[in-house]
Length: 231
Image (cartoon, rainbow, N blue to C red; front, side, top):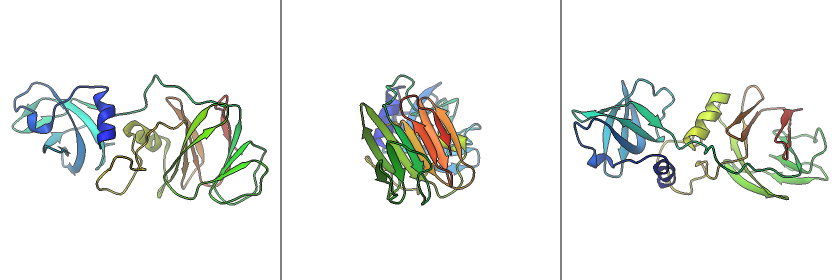
């Protein structure tokens, strides 16, 4: 919670819920979504909670840490804006002189690469990194640094689902307390976000993050140009 709160405070100023004055024309609050309501949700922080009336919050889920802005009347906030921690626009994009192959299911590498990521050991002359847990954050150092996030999704994940996770800086997770250092926090921002899931294979880019969703096909990534393709 504190990690995402810190990211939000770098983008906006906010007060604690207990210090939010009833009748204020506009105030910003940072908190965790406790539960959904018929017209919005309950937002809570360590000082208290408040009901937020929000018509445009269809992507908001329990456990999200967000900043909401709006007036407060009769102890309820009318949401006029939502700020997510999101991926910074100004950040160093990881690149390195190497090719990487992602293998979602057991099988032989479909093409040559310098680095092979797989969920099981494979026979290859390349450096084989076996991803045996999820979520898993790792960094590759080879004439530069690449941050990689591996996530095994229980359900089918669309491009918009993946982008929403990056905007929230939070992977889909069981509800409950979010602790600092939690593996479900997206911190640091990955250069490659590999989602092993169900359904169609696809590749998307969001603010410099290459998102690869795979269920069966292997994916090849040029880590210098950041071009990616399924094979």
